[in-house]
Amino acid sequence: MSATNRPLLKVDNLKKYFPIKRGLFGRTVGHVKAVDDVSFTIGRNETLGIVGESGCGKTTVGRTILRLIEPTAGSAEFDGQNIFDLAREPLRKLRPKMQIIFQDPYSSLNPRMTVDSLIGDAMMYHGLVAESERRDRIKDLLVRVGLQPSYINRYPHEFSGGQRQRIGIARAVALNPDLIVCDEAVSALDVSVQAQIINLLEELQAEYNLSYMFIAHDLSVVKHISDRVAVMYLGQVVELSECEALYENTLHPYAQALLSAIPHPVPGKKKKRIILTGDVPTPINPPSGCRFHTRCPARFKPCDTVEPKLLDVDNGHLVKCHLYDPEYRAMVPDGISQSFLVELAGQKAKKTAPEPAPSPTPAAAAAAVAPAAVAAPPEPAAPAAAAPAEPAAPETSVSLDAPADAFSAMDLPDAASWGDLEESDDSESQS
Image (cartoon, rainbow, N blue to C red; front, side, top):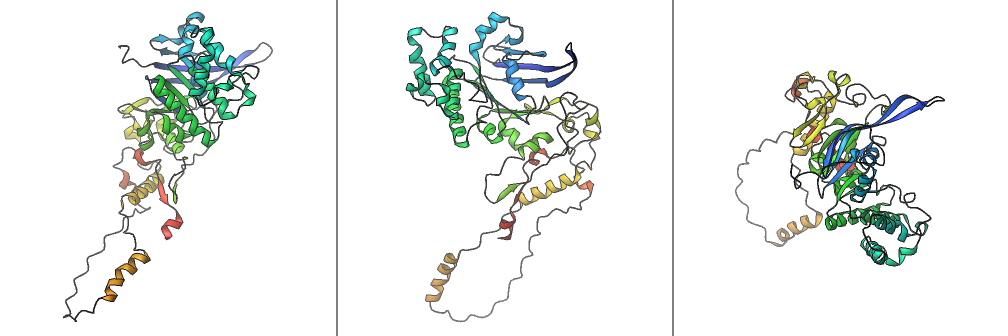
């Protein structure tokens, strides 16, 4: 593969197990499988969003790729070099090209160092700037991230949370990196400050041709900034796709439940939440087969014993689910999540039904009547035969008592609408 077509970062079968040690001699009695067989790529000037529940392994993936944590297995190629095979000195030379923005802007900055030292020491260590140009370079970076150049001699405790995160961004950008891991870089900030930081990251990406691995919990923020999105559950990627395709045509049941938690932005509308039952299994002893089968509403026979494959179902849209595997498609029972499918069909019928014409406002009605009141009454005409009334169009509805045969044609659930079950508010339907 040529250098122009080669992805900036290629991760294959990444695993990170943390040993559990007990006893006087520290005997290993088990492992926490924080990351288990994760693969993805990040292109140049691309943003890959990674979402999932707390503890699913998002942060561990980012830190392992940067070798802040040593991997258990797998490979990670950065611009053609396997990061995990590099010795100490070659890895040190590669460090400026891979940077990280930490989640907590309070603990990620040394309280005993000024802004001059926080940003400038790394540039001097890697020989990226001369001593005579150091302070000018730092002041330019401060201005670029929205801070005043006079802040160069201040300490971290003199700044707010948003200002500290801007310093962290300036520190990451100072080394001219190609890849920045944003480890929940906005989760500890207020909503208004989050928007400012997101806009700043997008501006810096366009200016410096950066690639981001954007780890976050806020799905609306991920949708705004990401080109592609990977959904993780219990240490594995269960769905990966282009951002627009994932949010409009979500396939995996866990991803559907995750996206259903996004609040609806339209007043008077609300989403029907997909509430998952049960607790998240422990990564020390994950379930056999599909790791989500203990909570999945579409569970069927192979889910308990056979681990699903990460399948490409639609031009790069990857999903790890037996529902979309041709090998098990014939085994999907007609009655699987039947009540859920019936409810889904009812919601789709509501969407396709034509909206009634709006009733005229009192002002419009008065304007329509006013000319008739002024005009002279017309001469009485001969009564005409009344035209036969047209039959009313049947209402669009779906019976909740529909037999299972009504859905037998659906080999797979119509996943394009699973997470988009919208319904009008009661007040709107009464109006």
